[in-house]
Length: 114
Image (cartoon, rainbow, N blue to C red):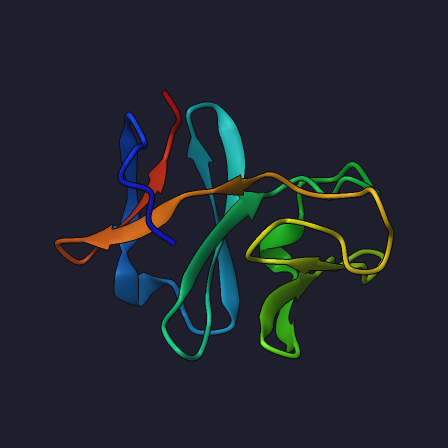
C-alpha cells in the first residue's frame, strides 16, 4: 500500500529483513506498528495493539488470507483482521488502525501522518 499524500515517512528497516508471512514491530510517530510482508511481496502496516486483548502483540500474529484478503490472526485470541482495512473479520465493529507503507531505495517506510 502506498500513500503519496502522507506528510512524513519513517524508514523502518531494509525490505529483506521483513520475512514473508512474518511481522516486525516498530515505533512510528510514537505509535507501535506491526509490519507484515506476504509471500507475494506485499507490505502492510497496522497498529500493533490487539484491540480485544489490549496487548501490543499483533506483530507476532499468524499471517494468512480469507479468499483474496490478506489477514493476520491475533496471537492471543485468534481473531482475524484484514491487512487491507484493519477490520476484524470475526467480531463486528472491531478494527485496528492501518498505516501507509512503501519501499523506497530498498527500505521499508511507514507513513507517520501529517
